[in-house]
Structure formats: structure tokens, C-alpha cells
Length: 440
Ligand code: 5CA
Image (cartoon, rainbow, N blue to C red; front, side, top):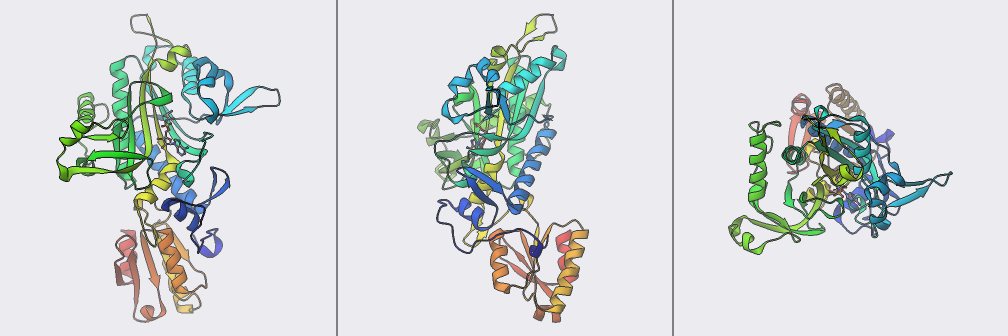
């Protein structure tokens, strides 16, 4: 992408209407713009990051054998009356009437809809277990939308729903999502610690929140440092391995992690002092096992192997896809701007000419840009005739993992500069070796 032909509005001044660093940086680097309270337009950079995050979530859900579909944002009120949640949900639900005075709502979540879809199509135990998911916009009319996309009113969520014949099966589905979540967040370059949670309005008795440590987080959290060391992608653990998954759950449950709601001072005191991690955290995911709460109220039944009718056991599993954009920035930035983990970076490389009016620099940079693009390396090319310092400043702000800097003096000596955004290390290399490094 050439900056000269893109839509990348960068702010010089720090916006005064943003209280936390991720929100400030998202506005300054031009990721989002607020269009109404708690509602955001995703500009090109923000949109690219959102899609990257969404794709990692999708790949890990697919690996865990969850099946993707897409349900609408608008739902009928009748569906929610059947589960009893239409009144219970309260003013957070955005209620709408269509031209025929039919009561509708903008979905804050989809338990009712997925249960009714499943109920209408599935009749036999042979079609279970299944976990279905979608990645769709939600609306919750939060009393105090704040911190930008972190607590928005309209936000993008991945929500998965599992259907099993019995509790043992439902627990396996729950453990499967638990592992999928640990892998998903690790791939994004962040550590999200699973913490036992109260299940709130979704209902149910088994629930975990996934929390990323950040000073501006909404809850106080306590956890054992082991959570920073586990590698959830280790290949000995396979989906479908019931024993292994139970072992994972036992490991997660026996390694201390709690929010202020579930904190237990006695157990905390048993964690060696040098392994205690305490701070504030942002909830990026939440999983629930709630049994037959929705299947029973919406009349979902399937015939069992012995001919009896079985009410499936369900769970639901949410990830805040748009919230993650903010949460990753909270966890990964410095005074100069965002530092994207490579897996979610909007582009891998920022190519900058220090002198946009120097013909040799422009020729070299155009050529490098063509080669990187041909090699499939996502590159943002700042080809504007702007001062070099200004361009480098906005590259730091935007936070791509690598900057490739072309200056007339270096070029005359046959070198370009490669800067690592995270470490700040700069290296002079020939164009060929720089290309080799970036395409490796
Ligand atoms: N039905 C369940 C699971 S599918 C559910 O709705 N869970 S939830 O309420 O915990 O939401 C799932 C995730 O969405 C949360 O962990 C959080 O990361 C994200 N989320 C919730 N509310 C907001 C909001 N107002 N703004 C941005 N993200 C949100």
C-alpha cells in the first residue's frame, strides 16, 4: 500500500477525549474514528488489524472442529421471550420496532438464535456433538461506553455454542474451547490468563474469563507466573484426546489465577512470592458451560440412542475481537507508538524514503516495494514527499514490526537501513540482504 494513495489520517496532537493509551494511539495512528457514542468506523489500518485478529480466531476455532456460520445482527423479540431473557436483559438491549410494529432487537449475543436454529434442524443424537460459531457485530447499550473499542456499544465478537448429549461431553467441548483460546491468544503475541469467573447473565456453573494484563484494565487480577511460560501449542496435546484435555483443565485449575471476584487469599499465599503476578487486566474472552438453560426453555430435544428424548447440554464461548485491537496495544506499545506483534500487524514492513524528492531513492524504493509485494510481504510504502523525520515518526506511531529506510547517502554506499520497531535496533544492509531478511 502506498501512503500517497491511501487513507491513513495520522494526528500530531494527542487527542484529549481519550483516557487510556490504546484509545489515544488508535485515534492518533488513524485506526478508528468515533461516529456516535461507543460506535466506531474502522479506518484502513484498524480494519486490517481487525481482520488479522479475526482470521487467527477463525483458524483456531476451525482447528478445534468448531463450524462457522453467520447469524444476523437483528433478532426478533419473541425468540428472547421464550428464554425469558427479553425482560431480564434490561436497558443494555437495543430494542427496535420495524414498520409493522414488530419488536426486534440488535443482538447482544446469540444463545437463543443458535438454539432455535439447531432445534429446527437436528433431531437425533447422531448429529451431536457440534460446536457452531460466528464472528458478528453485537450491540450492547452500555451505560458508560469508554476507552474506545475496549468498551464500545457496537463491537465485534466471536461467539461459539456447543451442543452435547450429556455433561461429560459438554465438559469435553468446554475443555476444547479452553485450549483453542489459549492457543488463539498465544498466536496473537499476548498472554491471556484463564481465570475462574462468576458466570453472570449468561447463566451456568463453569466459567472462565481470559485476561490480558494491562494497567488500565477494569478488574484486579492475581496469577502464578507459570501462565507466562506455558506453551499451549505443544503438539502432544490433541483435540479429541479426552484425557489430555482433562489434564489441561486440571493444570489450568490448579495453577493460581483469579480476579478480585474469585480471589482466595489462602491459596494465593501458597504461591511463592517471586511467582506472584498482580495487576489490572482486560477481559478478552469468556467461556461458559450452562447445561440445559437454553435448550430446555427453547424446547431443543433430540432422540437418544435408546429412543428416549434428550435435552442437549450447552456452552457458549466469546472472544472480543474488536476489544482485542485495544488490548493488544495496551500490552504492546512505547512512548513513540504502537508495537504490533507480527501476527496481527497491519503490514509487516514500513518502507520509507528519507527524501521523497531524490530520484535515486525513489527508483530504489519503488523497486524494493515491487519485490516485497511480489514476494507476498505486506508492505506500507511511505512514498510521500514529506520530511524524513515526519515519516519515521508516523511509522513508529503505526508500529509495523520492521522499517526499511532508504536515504540518499546510504544508497550511494549501496546500503539501506533496517530497523526493528520493538528493540529499536538498526542495521545497515545491502538491498539484497535486506530483502532476503524480510522475505525469509
Ligand atoms: N454469550 C457469551 C459468550 S458467546 C457472551 O456474550 N459473553 S461475554 O458477555 O463475556 O462477551 C464475550 C466477550 O466480548 C467479552 O469477553 C469481551 O471481550 C467482549 N465484549 C463484551 N462486551 C464488550 C463491549 N461492550 N465492548 C467490546 N467488547 C466487549
